[in-house]
Structure formats: C-alpha cells, structure tokens
Image 1 (cartoon, one colour):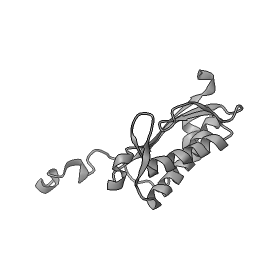
Image 2: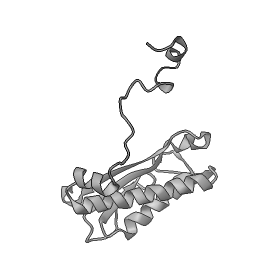
Image 3: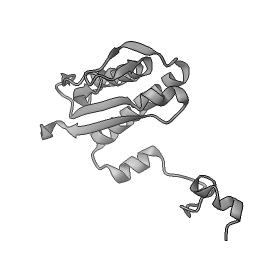
Length: 150
C-alpha cells in the first residue's frame, strides 16, 4: 500500500502505471526501423525526418519566440519558431532524393520537389507553438504517403 502522502500526487509522483524495468541495452534506431518497416526507402525517409526534428529542437533552444508579423492560410499568427521549423522541413523536402512532393500547414499547396522521389510529405512544423515560450511541450506532425496513393 502506498503512503497517504504518495496518494495525493498520483501518477505524476509514482510509476504505478508501468512495470517496465531499465535495460542494460536498447535496440538501435536501425534495429527498431528494421523490425517496424520493411521498406528500406521508408526507413531512410524516417531517418531524414528525425534528423530534421533534431535541427528543429536545436533551433528552438537558441531562438527567441517572437511574432513574425504574418499568419498562415488558416489565420494562425506565425511565430519565428514556426517559420524556422517550416524552413528546415522545406529544406529536407527540397533536397531529399526520397521526396517527390510536399506541403505544410504554413504553405498548404503541394510543391513538386523531386520527380524521382517516392514519398509525399505533409507537416505541421511546430504544433503547439503558441505555448513554446512557456516551456510547454510542442511537436512536429508529419504524414508520409507513397506517391502511388495519388
């Protein structure tokens, strides 16, 4: 039985929701992707996106959150960090040999990037960006489709 003071904190104070035990070794990214995705090109696409997410994380750590004096097509006020994250994902989309078309919440028109690419990417570069200056969690949402799906 938990002590009375522990009960007041619930899940945020205890780990009663999991019985997971720390391991001495975890699977590498390549091992996880190999088990989860059989398509080698899709594995490569995921790796490229994760690299872009690392760049977005680094940019969030060093850039001030300010209003960019513009809004996206949905009427959301853009912050500097929205634009930075979007630019980093566009850099990926335009330089990747795997991406044939791309679109963003900030610029929702489909852009052809590489006719030989296999995937269509769509993203929200920084979901929750309006709360990033309060140090709340934000994330990048990405959809990946094979170009054969139309």
